[in-house]
Structures are given as C-alpha cells and as structure tokens.
Image 1 (cartoon, rainbow, N blue to C red):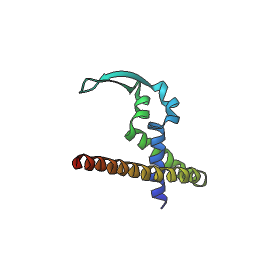
Image 2 (image 1 turned 90 degrees about the horizontal axis):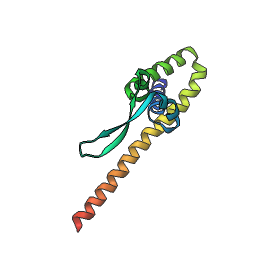
Image 3 (image 1 turned 135 degrees about the vertical axis):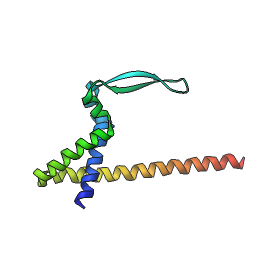
Image 4 (image 1 turned 90 degrees about the vertical axis):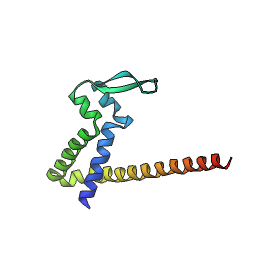
Length: 121
C-alpha cells in the first residue's frame, strides 16, 4: 500500500510542478514564449525552456524522476513527516486520475450522443 501511495504522490507532485497554474510562477523565469505555426497554418504561442532547469520544469518524464527521488528519499529519511505529505499527494493523485477518467468518458458520451443525433437527421 505504501508503494502505491508513493507512486500516486509522485504522480501528483510531478503534475503540480509541470502543469498546474499555481506553480506557473516557479516555471516562468525558466521558460520563454515563442510563436509556432501549426500544420493547418494557425499561429500558436508555446512555452519553451530557456535552460536545462527550464527543461526539467517542463518535461513530465524528467520532473517525474526527480519528484520520485525527492519523495522516496524523504520517506526513507523522515518517514513520519514525509508520510503526511505522501498521504495528501497520493489522495490528490488518485482523485486526479479518477477525474481524468470520468472527464474523458463524459466527453465520449457527449460525442456519441451528438453523432447519434446527426445520424437520425
């Protein structure tokens, strides 16, 4: 059970670092915005890293390794203190996965409902 909690905590902590709005202030000094033209001709603004540290903050795989190292080491060195954070992050990580699954399936239901309505007309 602890192993699963560590995985979920690492997942949520990684997501917090790489994607969440609340940590944008941490990522902002290490990324720059550039305009990129997509295949269909539209111009989009994209954030790209300015440095290796910026890459670490924008790369899900990289940040995941470092968050696992940080959380795993904290648990090994300070198990009672780290467990509180692991518990909170693992609950949030599990909830995040469930919310993503539910959200995707709601979109699928809407898509198929609209498709069915088009076929009926």
